[in-house]
Length: 177
Image (cartoon, rainbow, N blue to C red; front, side, top):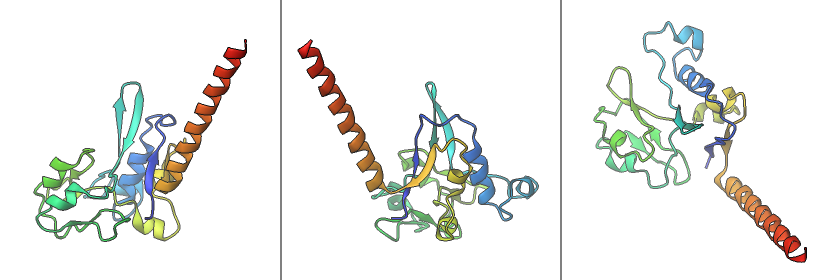
């Protein structure tokens, strides 16, 4: 897989730079200033959502068994590679909104003209050209990164092991006192 966009919510400051960069990257010009004057407008595929005192950047998780792909009546949403992203063909989309209703993360939206949906595409063109996804590149705090799931899982195991070891050391030290 090309990876997933990983959000370290402890580093997100809700600046919404990811939203602006994403929206601009998906316009004809690819430039924020020019895009503001284009007819199509700006439609980000990532949203920063407040959750208590935290800010959480959310975008398509490119599910392994994606419910949006299963309900799409036209085949506009597909997952061509088992480990790849859910891709969208806007020319085939009829804007029925079925995918919006079944997305467990609520990250699919309708385009401003209502003719098709919009969702994160992992900026596949940018990644294939050796660049990071627009949201990742724009994040000033490094809260967003393009990561491999196996690497994330390994780091989580290592962190959990370190915490357990530290707890065991503290417990042993307390017993000795």
